[in-house]
Image 1: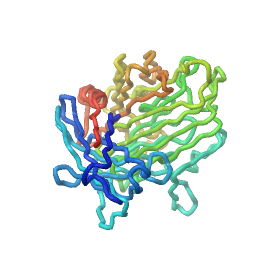
Image 2: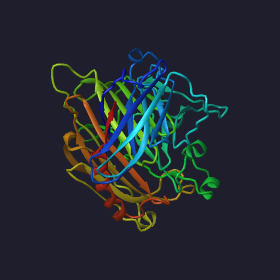
Image 3: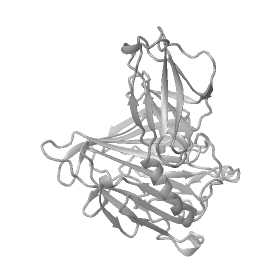
Image 4: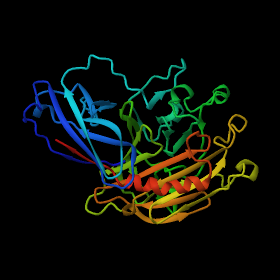
Length: 421
C-alpha cells in the first residue's frame, strides 16, 4: 500500500539530537472512516551528513510500548535509509510514535518474530541451495531449472508468491491452512507427509492464462510473454521480519514496433497481508514522444476448462469492471503433471488497477484482462490478491470472496498520512 509521507526535520531542537542519537516524532493519521490493521508505515531516515552519524539501530515506541520495526536499505548502498513498521489504527484517528535512531549497534538481543520470508536460491547437486541477492542472465539463456523454486519467492504469514525466472514471469501462488511461515520447509513443493501435517501447497496452474496479476506485454490482440529481452534479472531489494521488496527486471525489451526500453517490476509484500503491491517502472524509453505502449494484467478464469468432477462444486465465475477491480473464483489442479500428488484447489483471485492506467477491458476464454498504459512518469501501479479455500481464516466461496474485494479496494486507495518532526 502506498503511504503518503510529509517530512519536517528539526534536528537542532532541545534534546532532539546528540552526537550519536536522534529522536523523531512520527504521527500517523487515518483520514478514512474505516479501521486499518497491519497498516504499513515507512519513514525516510535523515542523511548521515545532516545529523553527523550513520544509523545503526532504531527503536520505535507508541505510548511507551515498543513496536516491532526494521531498518531497510532501499537504494543498495549498504546503508539503511528507511525505518519500517506496521500499526493498527482506527478510522479518523491519529497515533504518535517515538522513533529513536542511534549510531551504535544494538547490544540487546531484540528479536522480532519473522512474519516474512524471501528467497532467491540456486539449485545445486549437493542440495544446499545457496542464497543469492541477485540473478542476471542473457535473455536467450534458459536458467529456469537452475533457480531453486524456479524464481524469486515471497511469503507473509498469510500467503506465498513466486515469480518465474523465464519469459512468462508468471506470479505463482502458495496457499496455507495456518497463518505461519512455511516455505523454508516446503519450498513450494509440499510432500505428502507435509500435506498430512497441515502444510500449504501451490494452488494455481496458469498454463497459457494470465494467472493472478502477472504483468504481460500486449501484442496482436492478446497477452504476450517477455521473449525479446537482452538481459533478464531478479533481485532482493530489501527484506526483514515485516516487509520484503523484490525486483524483476528486463533490459533491452523490444516490442512489435521495434521500440526498445527497460522494465523494472517491484513487488512488495507486508506481514499480515495477502495482497501484493506491484510497481512497474519503464526506463530508457524512446525519446521525443509519449511512451503509450499497451500492456496487460488481470486474472485467469480458474477451472474454466475443468470438468465438473475437478471443480468439486466450485463453479468458475468472475468479472472485470471498469472501476479497476477484476476477480475470479474456481477450482482446478495446481499442477497438471502431478494430479495424483496434489488434488484440485479452490481459489479466489483478484487485481485492483487504478483507473488512470486502464485503457480497455477484455475477456477471453481464459482471462479477465485490463489493457494498460503508463502514466506521465512512465510507471504503472496496481495490486494483486488471492485466497485459498484451505485457509482457516479465509474465504470459502465465490460470494464471500467477491464481497470482500470492495473493502480491499477502498483500503489500498486510502493510505495513511505520515508526518515526521
